[in-house]
Length: 283
Figure 1: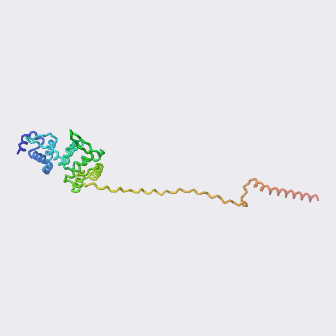
Figure 2 (figure 1 turned 30 degrees about the horizontal axis):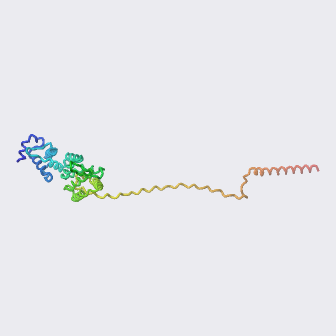
């Protein structure tokens, strides 16, 4: 009854935010019992109005409805449970800027759709040393952003029924054993690469714990083409030495002498014949 009266008093203020008492009632129910209220009361018919009012409460645009102070924290968690993109981006951006309370809100929302907003942090090379943020005499140990985003992610998985029991059990173990940070960061990088497609498809039941990488297949280098041997030059055989007795005459002077002797003999014979003929005549 109180809710109905509050709505009627502030109907003029809330008219742009909600179309009737039913919308206001749903929003108040959800924000007051943010983690356990059945989300099936948000339907395709009323979702736009419900989400719009929840956003205004979560961002403090609406701080009071009649005598009721709406729960802005509960509204934010409900919006996370509803996987509202505007809220998921706003909260993860605030978380990255150092608002650590938003990390707890993300965990309470237990919504797998928020993890893709955190996954890029897994690949930061931000070392393995925590820092201490001090406020007065108190200090808060802050993990490297890559580790903190990964830790929030496994906490979401461990608490969310969107994931298989196997994956939730792995996440529960991972959130307790996230040191050394180098190993945890490496595991989460491998896990995200193996499951990113399932998150893109919104198929959270298909998400699995990190699987061992298959051994690298060593491809044998193709055999080198058989080289054609270069032709080996063959030495031209030297001619066998000819015996001196049969060697050809190579002296040109000797050849000329042999050619003149027949002429000398012929002249001598002719002279002899003429002399003999002259002697016979004289007798």
